Image 1: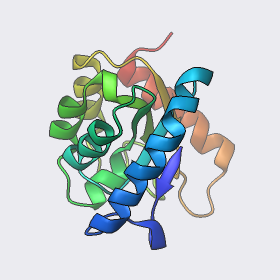
Image 2: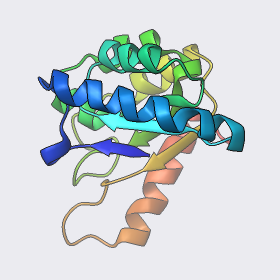
Image 3: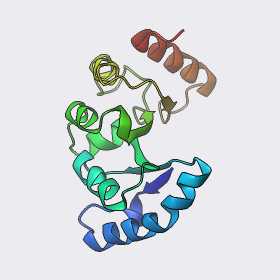
Image 4: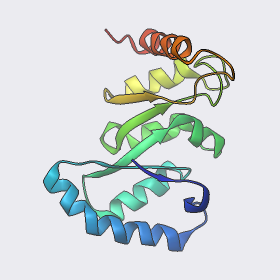
Length: 154
């Protein structure tokens, strides 16, 4: 995962985006040879991610999509997932920033429908879905079961 947050936030940073493309063009051929996926996680829109991927021109570069980050940036997560499609997503971050999944502001049933509609069946990471002071094992067990119910994992 290649994370672009805080000082590395690429929003409104054309110079930074160009530098990322330049660097990814250098490492992408090596990643392809080794079977490594370079997943970009940032606050950029789906279109901005696709622009970077297209400029790099490598199947090894994909989006590590974080629903909460996208929503916090004001992006429409339902349109973005459809735009990216399963081919451009390497993994998904499922989080609520301090709440159990389904107890915050994200519409997880609708997210599950859109994710299933595009045919995505890859990795999903639960992140930051534990209320302050709560037992992390209990919360992650709940979150896993919640996602299993939505996605019907068996």
